[in-house]
Length: 153
Image (cartoon, rainbow, N blue to C red; front, side):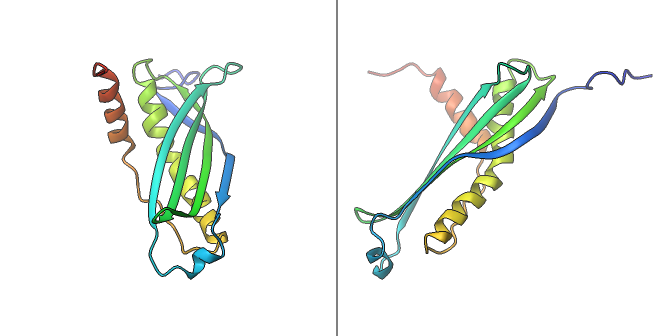
């Protein structure tokens, strides 16, 4: 009979999803609404994580999203959000933990961040802005590859 007192293998539980910080600017409004040109939109992502020292196995993961829309050198809008989650992770080896924190957790947070950014942009008077799916595994592999290469001077 299996021991029902302990977890059977790795677990990833979502304890809390929350927004830590949001910011929105449309510095050239209302004139920007008269523009005929379509803005160029850039999206930057940042993933941060840290253990909560008061509780073993509990980690805060922060998915930072910055969206900048510009027409030539004029900023149309700038929307930023830090979408966070508290995740309880157990049964994962030290070597695999960064993958869970930088691939698994951001995949859970991305739909929430997408909604926050879309709401900010829409409330700013602009059309819907949907963030496409992100391959966090590829981003993790690129980060690992960049970290293993010697620095060039």
